[in-house]
Amino acid sequence: MGFNEIQQETDRLVLRTAERRKAIVEFMRSAQRELSLSMFRCDDFGIIDEVAEAVKRGVRVRVLITRRARGWKERLKDLTAVIRSIGAEIRPYEDPVMKYHAKYAIADEGRALVTSLNFTRKCFAETHDFIVFTQDSNVISGLKQVFENDFNTPSHPLPPISERLIIGPDHSRWRITEILSKAETSIRIMDHRATDSSILDILATKQQQGVKVQVIANGLPGGLISHGRMALVDEKTALIGSIHLSPPSLDLRREVAILVEDSAVVTELYDYFEKLAMNEKRMINLSSRLLTISPEDEDEEEDE
Image 1 (cartoon, rainbow, N blue to C red):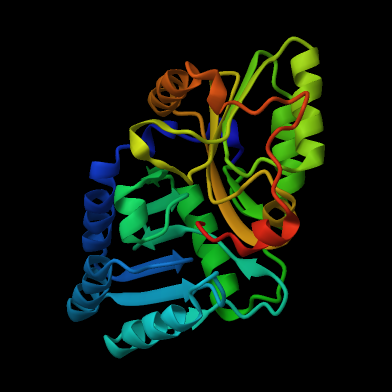
Image 2: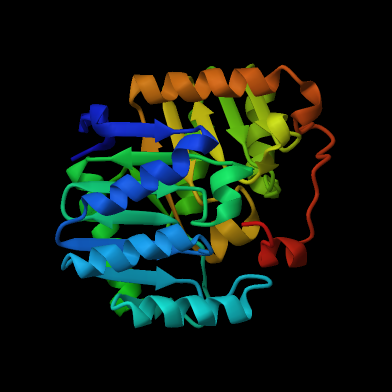
């Protein structure tokens, strides 16, 4: 089934920091048979408690976790030990080269979420982030395929999956390049690590062609920390997930993002972006490329 044929009313967006943790807890509690969690970081004891509660009610809980995150060497070991001790299956991503950075979850056969946030106290209270909940069977099936592949046979190539999912590094660069290149009226991006020269060239070219291009990098209101990323194209398509528009994220990491065309979700994101875009200081100057991050710093992703 093609992307345009999918019923989009099954998607729900969570933006507000006050709603994030509750929404994820409710999602975890909905699982009756299987709960699959893809993690980069987790230090919220309430989330770990929900994993334990799911195991107690007979749910098969599997956790796929990164092998490395800056400043988290010992904490990742402790987290792995704790989750294993409460009866869940946990496995570090075994690919020897590719860094694991995907953030999504699947409950049974009927619900999934794709997000830019980590299951941390910081991301539940202090960051700008996005969560998309979906009941789209094709997305859920695709995420299950990705999870099974990465949990059991990470060295194997991925099978074909839903066009709504963009999986890095397998096809993230060419899919995102294609989406941005086809923009006709507008491109709005929130990404504090939008540093890839090829992507920035595309954005500059589209701007020269008369497409309204805005890229918010940082300086978010309310004291929020820049962390989440999303893109809006032509006010009808949104892209949300863990993928940054940076060389490491596009080319070297397992990442997951979801395409959304639900009009209510797109409108909510558009309104949110427009409020932030009122302050020009938050924008990247495409002509001067003011935002620069060294590859070494970016690869560590201290706050990701």
